[in-house]
Image (cartoon, rainbow, N blue to C red; front, side, top):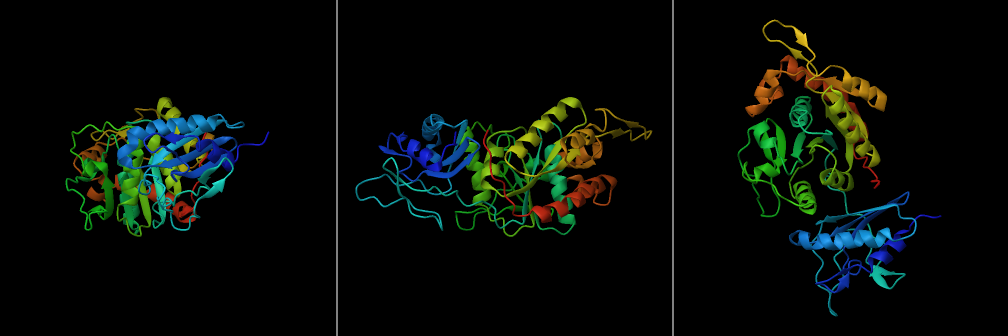
Length: 386
């Protein structure tokens, strides 16, 4: 049996009504980024971010409508705010504003104004390579690794930025000792904050450190998109994205909206952490983002008094996991008090002691990644929804 077509999907979505508009989502020009892969369907509904809670009901109705099409195995709809919300439709209303290069909507079978939905433009296209630093679980030192890796890229002469994509638990302000608020020269876009030669942005720069981030999924995705779209990143050679742990809205948003060059998985050596690392790796495989390899953090401990080495969390597990999963083992970073103290003080070890052995460990990982970044720059994924 043949799989679903975009025409069938748009026809089904033509029956999904936005109640306060009295019109369907296709006629309102809200549907974009339709992706069909082996019976798995994904698409976006472009909304006014202030209406995220109301539109969550519409999102669920849209998923339900498409799920009823023969041959559809799964459906994932996401809410985005790439453009202004479509105006309320009246007899004199203008057609929805189109993105540059997008064809105006036309008729399609089923009688709904729509036409072929075009995916929204990728974000961060001016960046040479966007690399995601991820982990399957929290507490493995992913953010510390991301920051020191970004600094290592900068020390190798690359114009580097770092984006803290963890909306619920931003750590970049503490790790880099940043207390300033971003400036906006025009009231529309933000300037990244510069620290240690890095261009930096985090939701933590804009909220109080002790403010809980109790946001729904669509709001998280909107905030993340805004930090990519409305920040003057400039022409970076590389942007390191410190992903939140696990797999969820932020990972899906990055896969859909950014031409990720690749991902780095951070894990500790023990079996439980490696199991979660495999989940993270498989998630990136499903969205066709290259996984550059695995970093084993907290790999071993050397006693500062006697020099004896102890494998507190076992050792070598990440290397074995990388071999089993067919990806590169990028290197190991020891469990070292100096790395922790440097991070807690807002002076990462690669900046605090650039000629020391710990900085050398991060530079070795960066050196392994730089050829991969250059080879994969601009090669974006085609998202698969399962």
